[in-house]
Amino acid sequence: MSKTSTPDTIEMRACIACGSTAPKQHLYEKEGLPIYRCGICGLGSTDVSNFDPKAYYDENYFNGNLHDGYADYQASESVLRHDFSKIVSVLKGYNPHGGTLLELGCAYGFFLNVAREHFDVYGIEICEDAVHACNARGLANVKHGSAQPQELQAMPRPDTAVLLDVIEHLETPQTVIETVARQLKPGGTVLLTTGDFASWPARLFGKNWRLMTPPQHLWFFTPKSLAALGARYGLEIVTIEHPARRIPLSLILFQLCRLFRLPTKPVKFLSSIGIPLNSFDGLRVVFRKTAAAA
Image 1: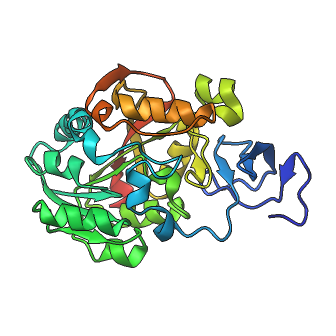
Image 2: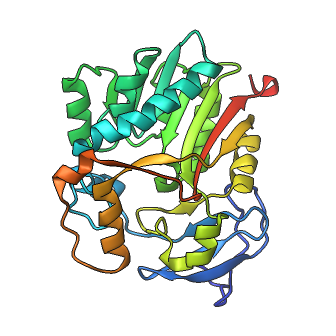
């Protein structure tokens, strides 16, 4: 990646979150890929070339055919809707009158199906199979795309933008956040979830952390790096927490099999069983667009 890299540092390329050009620490290798950490904001990153997200994030990613995807996303709908209802309740507190909501990476539309009871919903999704499923379920405003600026600009300006476990997958998350912030209406809200690279599980397990899955995950955020990234584009954090979630039992077993390098054979009936869990390594962050950025 760098002509001037040593085993412990990487070239002084600006951090996409805080903008620092301080050398980044090389932590370890995972799946043959280097993992680096910004010494200022703690943002983790990797270096991936020849990775085509459109080829990777297809129906196989959602149905258990990829070892670092979902065990059976569609069969987990009832479990996922439970958590999505909680997220909609959070958003209603910031947007009591509803308005336009845009979800980036909306998968099969389970969150949007809950959110449309209060919001006028739009979505963008890279998996064509998922887009067709959304459209078939009456989510006509879900479009196929990879959250490029021109795609986001073609959507109505949202009052609320949502990225649920998406930002870590993006090749250039700073460009996406910049565009979302620009498109967001004055006083608008951004809610995102992602792993916490500064959490004790991430630090304890290192390369074996459950969310250390390059090239699926390209970025590993911390509260400090998210605050810095948002501030660059006029977004300030209003809440940040590590909420408990209800996890499909099939996904728990799927991830354990991956961790211990055992065969991953999803058991579909387990997908409808939700296990309440707080591993304290998952962030939920709400940003508000500042008056200065409006």
